[in-house]
Length: 170
Image (cartoon, rainbow, N blue to C red; front, side):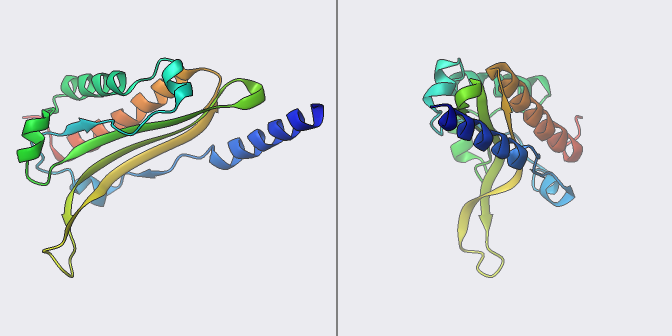
C-alpha cells in the first residue's frame, strides 16, 4: 500500500512540474479580434467535475461572477436573445477542469478562458465556424478551491484588459 501511495505522489509531483507553466494567447493579433464588439455573452455550459461541484464551484456561480466582473469593467453582457442576434455571436467561455489530487488531498486544475465567435476561412469565406480568437489558460495544483477561483478571476481580468485595450471606454 505504501508503494502505491508513493507512486501516486511521484506521479502528482511530475504532473505539477509539467503543468506548472501558464500558456496564453493574448497578443496584439488576438486582441484585435475583440475590436468593435458591442458586448459578449458568457457561457459556462461545459460540465464541471463532481469534485469541483462538491467544493462549491458551479456553472451558475461562475457565470454570475464573470458577468459581474465584465459589467463592473463597463463591458456589456449580452442576454441569450441578444447573443443570437449579434454579428458573429461572440461569447466568452470559462471552463475550469478540476480533479481531486489524490494523496495530498488538494486539486489539480486547468482553467481555460476562450473568446469565441463565428469566423470565416480565407480560402472559402462562405464557410463559417465558431473559433477561439482569444484565449488564456492556467494549470496548477492547490490545496484550496478558492485558489482556483482566484486564478479564474485573474484570467477574466486578462480578458477585460485585452478587451479594453482595443475598445477604450468613451
